[in-house]
Length: 149
Image (cartoon, one colour):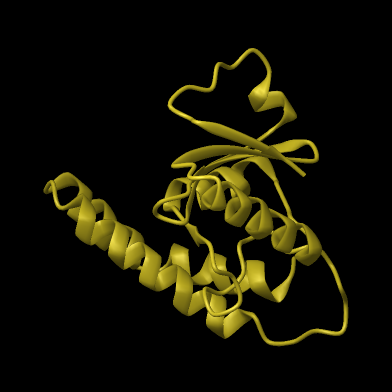
């Protein structure tokens, strides 16, 4: 398991889950999302020390590195489906979103190899991520563009 995964697991497994769960139950989902996002960014910052290997990243890079934001749902889908993006693929995804924005897209489907990402272009946020198995027999709605990379 990479240092990034270990750092994320320890940050997410901590008592922040209880606080987030409590916020969700009390109807304060915005606070819950902000708290989970803050914990996630903190874990990324701690765990993303330079390493000698160029292995794929299993979680999105630090916001300082990536221009894209990642919803909690997208991060959870990446973890549960075992989806990983190499750093060069992350750059290609960011470029695809920038191209979609340049064409006036609001919500786009980005097809990246065997994976698909639904991205809110206007919010610069990856909403969800799926692999080929999850895409099978699905209908993608509420998108106004598709970018294939």
